[in-house]
Image (cartoon, rainbow, N blue to C red; front, side):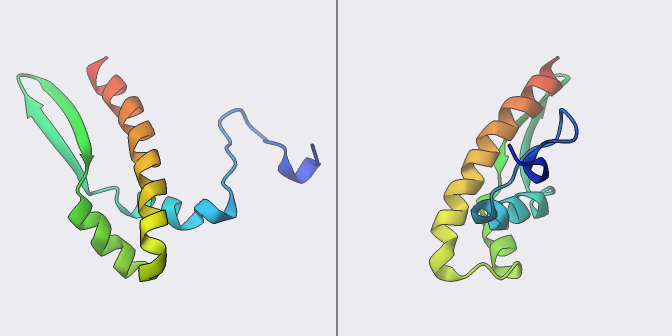
Length: 90
């Protein structure tokens, strides 16, 4: 593997250029999570898709690209939910 593609640290990750828009939208949706709370527990349900749509418009994601960006965002959301709900339950 070329040195410029090697990870410097174990927690580094690779982001392909075609996923950049979805990553930027995901990061910008940090305050758009739906959270269920009760009896001392917190459970993240998922992103508020109305908020996601607003973020995509504000980030300048073209109409014709939104379907693909949204599909990629849902993959990020699904993986994030596994991590954050595991942390909040443990």
